[in-house]
Length: 460
Image (cartoon, helix red, strand yellow):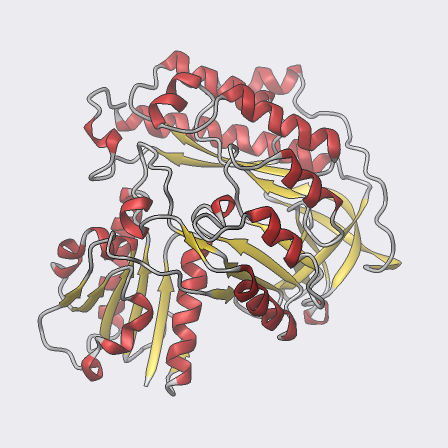
């Protein structure tokens, strides 16, 4: 039998889907691409935004048009939170919640369609355990995403994750080290540490994220380890110092911001204020001016006036960030913010999102431009086109160079020539290997000058 698997949402979802896919392979299934006919279709869903819910419904309907007899299984956050909504979609056979998703074969009944969907969703408070998972990027053994933590205790006003995944939990360090060592033995050059709230690792089991990072740093066979995201109130100077001093950990930090207004941060129930966030980024850049720093931000949260949005814009503009992930606020059922009465109309939300995305483009170009003419090591993932290969630097710069599949899963030094859209164009530096000491980087002049500022559309 053939199975197609599709994932929506975060890297953690991808890791879990990949683990479930291996369960199918172990039982003799052939895994096929989502656009090919299949006997079984597994959709791992996200429910962070209304758009994610809508995308889930569209994917199910598209799959059934391609494979009308496919046995359709829906798992993930949307399945946990809104199983009745999914059950209303014609053709869905099985809906299982967070506790059951790694035991799919206990609920499929031979993958026989019955005409009515079966729902197995437990209360999220019913003692969820940590389920290990990892995934690989499609097309090669270059980067593996290793799950080290699940759930969240933060209960931010806008977020459904605690409702969908339960409380923060993790597994002892030796278990993670064994899995990381297995990943290394399979030939992966980079491991990306993932979770819902990675920095909360070790809570309730007597350890912490720094102790885990120290143990991972000792693993042989892996060139790079990258931390996917870590909350600013958890990212301590001690963690920063360790990551930047390590030869293995990438000098790349993704630190969620969500708003540049203290008024909105408090209303969101975030656990820091803007000045703390600024101090954190300043400390990183003082330690390593070449470090890449990404941030998440939500536009149009209830109560965000024009003035408060301007505060967010100005704050982000002043930060030494490398890129920005922008989300338009989406009202989610059963969250605290769903009860707020001062919603921002959708048109204004979307306009503000676009303004911040444009700012993100400027910040990324500013960061990339500081490396023009410099040589950096890049781990290549595979071909983009017939004559071009793509990869990532340690500090999260996307690079393309002329090359072929022989570059895949190899680290080469390249010289940055120019910027094209969301990546840099470069050429391989002959005679320099990943064993050579990296050059000293000196960031170039800022691109954000008065002429650029004058071209930016003022927030409405």
